[in-house]
Image 1: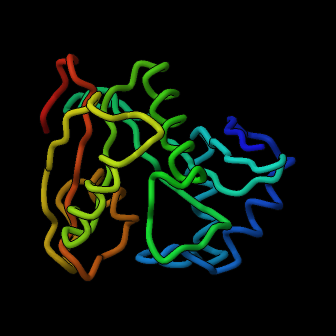
Image 2: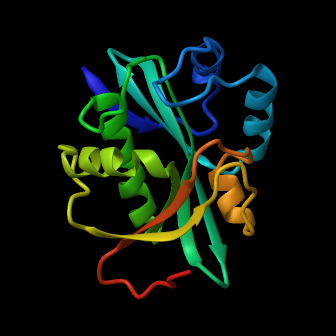
Length: 191
């Protein structure tokens, strides 16, 4: 039996989350996280929402969602962390440990009145990511317009703090596209 639920502040799952993070296993195209960086992420995300994906009541994957507001961009949200005990050679929205979490994230964000989702992706992976997005069987299809806000050249720190945070506050060896998905029918800033 699978389920998705909010686990923000629930200490019951903290040890399992830590085991998954510190296993140093990863999904292809990602980098394992150090114990020190995990501790920093924990401190930085105290006000964020954590959603867990469970199989037979065992935590398998989770995401952390941050909600923000600025004069320039209005209200927006980001997925600041994604961790999973399922390790594959590629990312696939149709896998329940991904797709169900992403659907829940969009549902929670919309329920809170946040209609812009920002993210970054290596420019060389954009087409693959978009094909995966379009094949997503867990919904979200056709509800959002996609905009490229900027392309940050490889090994360059971007001008805006938001873009730097979306890049994990690390220089990347690839050009990085900064993207926004905006719920159709909502008049939102384009910057």
